[in-house]
Image (cartoon, rainbow, N blue to C red; front, side, top):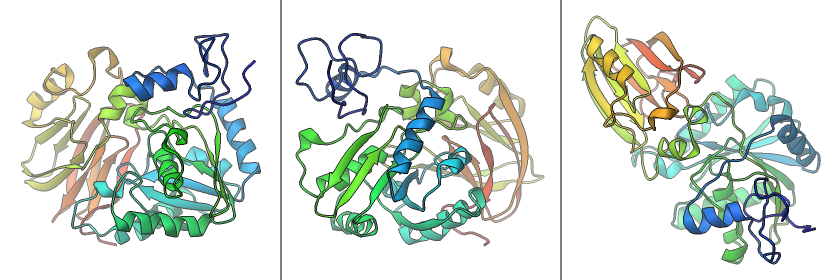
Length: 369
C-alpha cells in the first residue's frame, strides 16, 4: 500500500482503483502526482471527482483544529461567490482575508480601495465573526510590489499554523505556490496550479521554514450559488477573466437589453436611457438587443452567443427586477456585474435559477457610501 499523498490534489495515493481519487498506476510508486494530476499538469486533461460535502466538512474541521488562524482567499472578480455564508460554522478561529487576482483590476483603480470595500462585505455576510485583516495581492502577477505584499502577508502569518480556505478557483493554490516560491522551494515540489475548479481534492501541508509558517491547503469549496457551479469545469474556467476584465459602457435605451454568454439577460426598464457598465470575463460574448428579440435570443442560445456547450444549459431560470442606485452594482455571482452610473436604473434580470444575484456598493469607480 502506498502511504503518501499526491502533491497536486492532496489525496492519499493508491494503485488499486483507477476510478477513485489518488490513483497511481502500478510501477509508479515513486511518482509525486496521481494519474489525474499528472495528466492535468502535462496534458491539460481534467477529470472530475464526486464531492462528498459531509466528508469535506469533517476534513476542514480537523485541519482547523490544528491551526491558529484561517487564511480565507477570495476572488476580486467574484466577491460574494468566494465568500459563501455556508462557511460561517467553520470560522472558529480569527480569519485573515487575502483578496487575490488584483492584477485584473483596471489600471487606475487603487488596490487600497479594496480593503475597506471587502471589510464592509465581510461585516454584511459574517456579522459578529472576527476579521483579523485584509491583504490585496496578485498571486500570479510579477514585479517588486508583489514580493513586498507577499512579505507583508508572511509577517502576518509568521509562527502560525494556518488553514488556507476558499471557494474553488479563487487562487488558493496559486497563492500558496507564490509563498513557497518566495522562499526558493524547488519548482518540482510546488503545488499544482490549474484554471479548473476542484483541482485540490484533499489537504496538503507545506512549511515556510524561514517564517515558521505551516500552511494547510484545503479543497476548494463549491457554494452551489456561482454560475460556474452549474456548468462543467472547463466552461466554469472560461467564465473567469484570464488577464483583465472585459468592460463595456453603454447608454442603454428603455427596453434595451444586453445578453451575456447565452446565460444572462439585463433589460433597462427605466423610462429613459441609463448609463450602464458591464464587467465580465474576456471570453464572455456581450450582445445588445431590444425587447422580445432579446428574449428570443436568450432562449435560443445561438452558437455565437453562448459560452457553454448545449448539453450544459441550465434548465431553470430566475427573473428579478432591481432598482439599482447610481454608484451601485447589480452582481451575478461567478459571471460578473453591471455598474449603474449617473441616475438610478430599474433593471430586469434573467439568469439561471440558484445563482446568487443582488445589489451592492460599486466595486470599481464612484460609490455613494
